[in-house]
Image 1 (tube, rainbow, N blue to C red):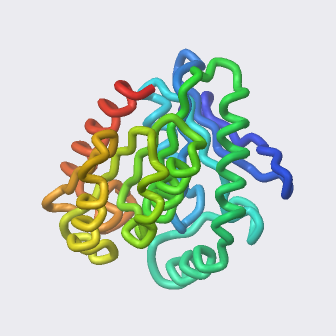
Image 2: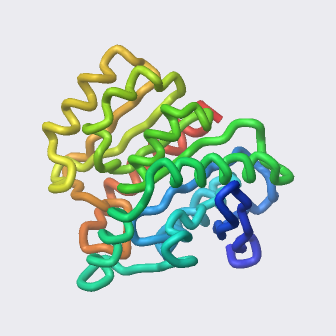
Length: 232
């Protein structure tokens, strides 16, 4: 994918920031704005972008921590973990949503992008994808283990687009009772689909982490591809 990916600049009212763009082989397709974990647009997020580009999507992953440092990339343990938590806690969610809106607008202007665009996020990005759906910025959303969604269910009534959520049954960050509250709140909203993977922990999609679970990651990827094919 090396020749089909590059960093581009997104302009917003607050300033310009970088975003990783990955293109499918044919150069065109539906769009995905890919929202990072607390570890930045690191190798894993770029790999996910390339994976979905290989599946036929134009994928743009904005650097949402740009105000605190351009293109920060972190690992998953020790000092990197602590720094990641600090970055998340220092993030202004209203500004992050403004950055996502600017990224969606930029993606829609790129040559070859189909009219319909989805947001997809992981953990911190999963929560942001949920709010992006509530804000009506995209046509569909995918939330992988979105931490904090259970604390923002007052926004559920604002969601009118299709949303797919993935959770792990052994996620210590998002306990099953939280997933249950989310499922109960969306029980009457048929456009919201929730999957719980019985053997998965938090971060099960990331093969750079000890919590990676290949079977769950493959199942979630398949479910996501089917969802995106139907919605985009």
